[in-house]
Structures are given as structure tokens and as C-alpha cells.
Length: 517
Image 1 (tube, rainbow, N blue to C red):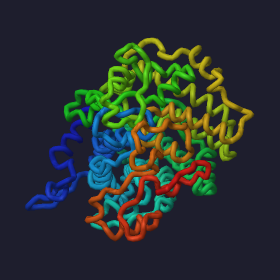
Image 2: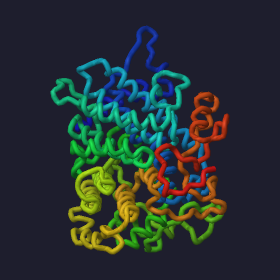
Image 3: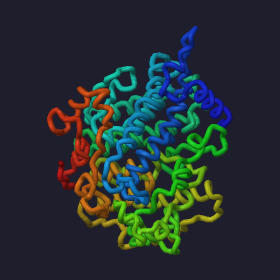
Image 4: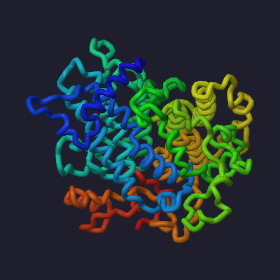
């Protein structure tokens, strides 16, 4: 990857109006109209769609990693860990997704749509828009999608069902559009895959597999059709080198938000500890990833912090942060790449597909390969990022783990027992990807989380939130469409607010009991 070219492009964006709060004013010259090239818009959308503070910390970490109980909060006054809404955090995520990098990616799509020479860039941009927007709809449910980011001041809220159907079809069409024979290539503007179209196909198809499995309870036929098509074609991630991850370039000259993994600076804020839920599972299963995911506490022990502590509980000496474990070293380095979809997740998607009879192979084989792939993923990460010369997890460790009675695949068990094993191991493999983990917990009910500690159980009486509330600013900016969306999803007629316990469309598993408020 040509880091100097990429750095130059991003610097040009920053100094000519990369921040889109004043996009129109900055990009309007008194004497002539100027356009930012689509390649630059695409580059910025990739980088800021991954690294933007509002997405990574406020969405993925402070909501996703807390709701999925990877991490537990130690900061008084921070309520998401105890199921209390933080409007400033969710609003920042919304704004960035729509009026920041969201505009960039949509404009890149529009500028290349009618230009055959730019068809590869157009396809890559469409794939990336699906990735960024599936996070948005999984966070809120019905959201502006079809005509969002296209200049409409009051875009319609599309139903999540319509959004998912469009995203699945869009990924199929974008993959078909990628053309190795096109002489015009995206080149160094593609900071994700360095213009490797095979990687883009595998990323898009693996994302399509993720989204299809996501709707398995809401529309089993839709899910099966897309799962079967993707797996029959076979062009998905098949080893860890295919994992979709944004590589970091510390010291690249543009600033921390572009060139350093966000967990590097979030870790320095000292806002959290490893969750008791995760720590207990690692210890109960004698998981060799224990020392990868975490470090010993200040007291020299492996200890997880309970989720959802009240401010008064956080002040108790028993819950002093020094008593609990922090992140493992790999996750908090400047150079650690940011994962979007990794190969181990794909193996667990294949395992569930096989379990449902929708894909080839056996659920057990895919399950075991997913575990092995996860261990090898972190072995590789420790070598590449931390410079270690020996595997942090040995082959004997892996074999012993696969033979552990809490891990060995229950080949004679029920569908639910086998599904719980698959989803639990997926949850472990994608540690830190809080938004995806939270979605899978809502969809399947696995793994089972610990009750939060705060008296009263936050806004949900202790139930895991199924969604977040809409930004209150939408009540003034787009009231009619917001009210219609809330009514459609089961809110009180004429009301702007939708309670966090309200299921969204794909959250339709009858085995997961939810007391909707």
C-alpha cells in the first residue's frame, strides 16, 4: 500500500473541507464550482467510517461493547452500561453516519454511477455503504436509507425489512459489477484492500452471508435464498488473510483519528474493565485466549467487573478499578488493524447455515474450524503487531480447548443446544466488535448475559435493550417521518419516542422472551 499517496489524498481532503459540517460552503469558490474527486471521497468514507470517534467510541464501544458485556464501565455518570440512554452519544453516531462520511460515500456513488470507467469504484463504494448502513439500522431499526444522504432535508424512514432486502440485493449486484478487465482501477484510494477485487468480492459475499443469517427468524425463506446462493458460489473468506481489516499507519502525519487504532487512545482514557461475563466464560472453559483478551488486575488476579454498576456502587472499595483486568496488549496498540468481518466469524456463519440445512458441510466441522481460526488469528496478530516470535496459543492449547467438555461440539444435542455453542464461540471470536455481538445476542439469546447490578435495571427493568432511542433532534428536523416510523414499529400513536425494549424487524426469535414496554 502506497502510504505516501494515501496520506497526500487525505491531507488534501482535510485542508479542503474534509469535515462535512460546512461541506457546501467550503467547497464553493466565489468564481467557480469545485468538486472533490470521487476517489478522495471514497478514501475518506473508508477511513472515517471505520475510525470516526463518533462511531468507534460512542457507538461501537460505549453502547455495543457494554450491551454485549465484553467490557464494563468504571466511569460515574456513564449510564449505557446500566441500560440508560445517552442522547449525546447516539446523536453523534447518527450525525456522522448521515452528514459526515455518509455523505462522502453517497456522493462517490452518484459521481461514478454513469461512468463505465469508474464502475469498480462505484461497486466498491456501494459495498461500503451497505456495511456502514447496516450498523445504523441494527442500532435504530427503521431509518432513512433509500433517499438518505442525497440532499433531501426530510428523508423518509424506510422499514428495516425494505432496507435489508435492498442491502442483500445491492451486495449481489455490486459483486457482479466488479470487473478485473476494466483498465481504470481505484488504486491507492482503496485503503482497505489496495484495489484487490478478489478481496472486495469475498468481503461483500461474507457481509451478505452475515446479513442473510441476521434475518433468519424474520424471513427464513429470504435468508435461505441468499445464504444458499452465497455458499454455493463459494467466493467468501476462506482463511484469515481474507479478513476485512483496516491497517493502521502510526506516525502518518494526519493525526490519531486516522493513523492509530482508536482503542489505543480509548484505553488511555481509562473508562472500562473486562466484563465479569467474559472473564467467567474464559476461565470456566480454560480458554487460552484469556491472556490475549485481558491482563491480570493490579492485585495480580484475573478478574472481571460486573456490568451495570450504579454510581454509588462504583464508589465502593470492592469495585476499585485496580481490582479488575484490563484489555490484552494486542487490542490497544497503535498498529492493531480495525476488523470489519474476520474469517472466524464467517466459519461460524457457515456452521449455523449447515445447522439449518442451508449450506454444505457439517456444523461441527465449521464450528471447530472457526475456533482454530480464531486462535490462529490472534497468533498472527501477536506476531505482526507485538513482534512476538512464538505463538501465544500453541497447537496443544488449541487441541485441549477443542476437547474441553464445555467446548466439544454436542453432536447429539438439540438445535438450540448446538446453536448456543456456535453463537457463544462466535461471540468470543469477534471480541471487541460490540455492535455485531449485541445484534447476535438479540437475535439468538446467546450467550446468556449476567443481570446488570444497578438497582431498578435502568430504563428497561434490567432487560437487554433491543434498540436505542432516536435522536431527539429528529423531532424538530424530520418530525412527520419520524412519527410515522415510530407508529409503524409499535410505538404509541403520534409519539416520537420508541422504547429500547421494542423489537426491530429482524429481532423475531420466538425463543427469546422480551417484555416490550
